[in-house]
Image (cartoon, rainbow, N blue to C red; front, side, top):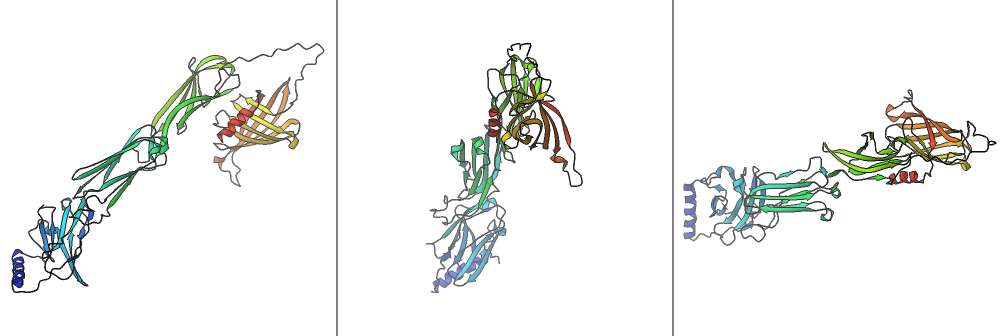
Amino acid sequence: MKLYSTVLASIVLIAVARAGQGVDVQPAFIIGPPQNQAVEAGDDVVLECEASGPSERVEWVEYATNSAGAPISINDELYPGHPNYERYVIYHDAEGNGTYYNLGIEPTVLADGGTYRCQDRYDSTSPAYMQLVIIEDTPNCTTNIAESGHVLEDQYYTIECVVGFRGNAHPAMTWTGPDSSLGDWGQATGSSNTTVWSGVNMDMTRNFDTQTFSVLVNFTGQGFVGNPNSANNIPLWNFTYSTQPLIVQWGPKNMYRVPEYDSYEIGQTVECWADANPSADYFWRNLDTLETWYGQRLYASDELVGTHRMQCHANNTILDEQHHADYFFEFTVNPRTTPTTTMPPTTTTAPPAESPCDDLTGRWTATEPHLVDMCLEVDNAHNGRILGILRNETDPYFVEIRGRIKPYDYSQLGLTGVWPANIGTLAFNGICRKCYGKEVLQITGIGRKVTDNPSCTDMGTRYTFPDYAFSRTGGPCSGLFQEYHLKF
């Protein structure tokens, strides 16, 4: 029901007349004062106020449009002259020993933020104030961190959040992130009468991997507690922004070679390594001849005898960008040493064209059709058990192989291995022969790719690999076995 000025004047005159005639007019005390609230602009809000009993003197006053106070209502009647008259509503209900005169603002606008008062007009000693804060919109947070969470080590990143408001108390912003001991990241916050902003910045480190940065926007006691024109509660409105868990990556750096010798013997290999995430791809280049070899390993061959300026190039891709690094060194390959031989007496029998091998234990290398390294340990005391490791030129690591031979007889052997990278299973068969005194291990391989998905009715495709002729390269296998175990 709307109240017009003539009706209001009549009520006021009647109340005065009753007081003059000695009518007992008791003030209705505010027993349920309104509470501080915060809402986003456009939402409806109800400001609650409960008096001690039925009364015709409970009024609402707002200080948002008029610092001196603009009356809104008297009891359950709105003043029609208020500029927000069309958006105000009084919810009036008598319940128990109290009476509710709740003020609804439907919908709110940004300018509604400010101080409101509910009071019995005849009890000026105990006005009930509250603060209404209107949030302009959901806080706007921006960052140069990718939505996927992928970031680059050593790059500078920022996150900033801004929120507009109207009222006499502003929201706070609290940041959480990786422990500061893991790296440097700073934060700053500022505010005006209508805006609050806060941000963080950091130089990204790999220690931030899998962690997140978050900001909580909410209200604290500042602007409410201890304010005589405010209730003491803290509004519950809040908002949280969080990044995706960070995925820290970096381009190749800190490159080195293994083993790092002053010179190398024919048959030895050199591996190039870079600290990179994701793992780098590699190629070697002879800067004297511009010959290029793709892969992580460089093989010391007869063609490289002498000293060459060598480059190892590493590269990876991060966020669609290429990152690379280079390692340079002088690669010296020693010529083959020809052992001094004493001519045997004419009565000495020449080595036979073919004879059995003495043993299989040791290191073997094949260079055709491509480089393969293998180390075997044969236990003749346990039924010819063979344990070993093998690596193709294209493999990034060694794999285990196992097999059997007839004890002390190397004319027939079998080995098996599992390649987790791209093949599946391989089976080898071979023999060892001493040809004119030089031991040669002849191996043939048969494999089956797991991607062929053989079934019970279709055994799938088998792949026959070329024959390999392995020759002894000398030296113990301990170095290769140690390298294998370090990688796993």
